[in-house]
Length: 310
Image (cartoon, helix red, strand yellow):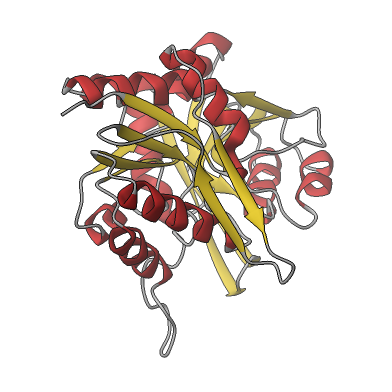
């Protein structure tokens, strides 16, 4: 049976998919979508996928149509006799719903994993899940890549005099320690308390930042409330400079306004999400090369561990 690779894009990640396909060394596959008057839609592959290794690139931020489109494309590929189907999900939406934080709420990340499995996916490829244990929600292999592979060389290139890695919350200490290990630096942590989602009511600093060049690291930046509060707190406690590395640039609500008014000198993100950034402080590091190389290694059955700094 043929196992030719074909890479396709869904609507939310067309630019990234084109880059991945180009870096992989082949054109992006042809697809189309029919929209009905009530808003329902039907995606289709406009070329054969029979016997092929199909890679479908789609981040799944809101609206939920992005996840639904990916599910429909997986189902279409399965019914068209694709050999293997890999969902390339640079940003896995609903990842923040990885546990029950209070009674009578869903575990959205597990539900999304179940839906992808039910649709017929054979493999998941993603980057910087909000919680590592989400990999266990899937009954298929998960290639979990880390943006640290790209961020760490960039941070080293800055040649900061007195580098210190910081986590904007207690949950990110493992990530901060990983960066610190490769950068040979100290770690400080912010303790935050939320009264409700997307709003930090109290924040305290654990560690000494006097005279340090701080690099905050996190998996995502949404409203930028936590990140900018942490940056301002660092400067108030004597830090020389503060920049941040955040994989997923959600940047909703007043995020750009907060970033512009904050003490952050730079916000380094990746292009897992398609955005026209509204701040000159935002620097984008492209992930197309990393995903193209990982797809090639998966297809050739070669270890991908050299692509990880984790």
